[in-house]
Image (cartoon, rainbow, N blue to C red; front, side, top):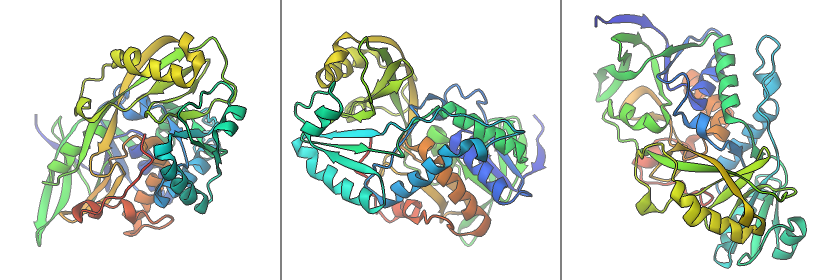
Length: 398
């Protein structure tokens, strides 16, 4: 096919929540900015944004992740005003029912250490003894539990697909162009050993001449980096979500994280739950088929021990989506790599992309426009830490 060229100052690969948030903030900060988002799956059938359990928490162990979520909840609470288009205000169904982390005796000290960091950042969290847990949640078994950490506000869940669509609609209203296409490569020039992208190549033969490219390709970000010879340690990891109902109500049920690593939360009239596979059973790029056997063999028995009412649960459905897992330290990878002066990374969110997209979108837009992090210093998440072998340790990974 003969190639054709068009010009866009900024091209974003990936139109999920991260890519759309960056596009929204780029054009909000500079309304004359021209942005093209290249998205191969406009129905988002496999997009993590559409398949996520869509939740937000302050209970991280690193200050930067807490600060990111603090802006995130502010943004989500005010989303109707921020992202309204033509008087139509989006509603993402935000429910602030909190996270509840449960710790065994072995994990109690980590929970207390994390609590100190969170309180130091102003997070509204409380430590609860087993007696206090049973008083607040009488349906909960505290066998083997020595301490709980409950988010009292600014934590909960929402409709991630509605957030994605709201960001996309607002970006389009601000002039962002979305193109259904598959990005397949880049044209570059080199100076002093540093490469500069001059155009993004699409599968249909088109070239998008550009001055900057953003890699927001989610679980498929690693091949984009490889076009420049950059090793991006991001891999697609399948995560299954199970939907079930229970005949008994669980008043005040938060998003609960069991010491086993299994999590659950209310969803409509029922519940959803998930788990992290063991390392030997967690291959890269597994087909997006739910791991049904895990529910019967592991998830249900563990849930029933923690919440006796779940002995009578009934599974209704299941689905699977990808975490874009950063194998280096499970945190976002942002900004430039020294090998290329105009390819910006926004990858490796490891399950936190939806809750982090407001702050990441704002921050990366500022970085592209001004050359510096502005409102929030995101340098702890910069690519350079990987090259230096300095992992950002985050102990609260789900």
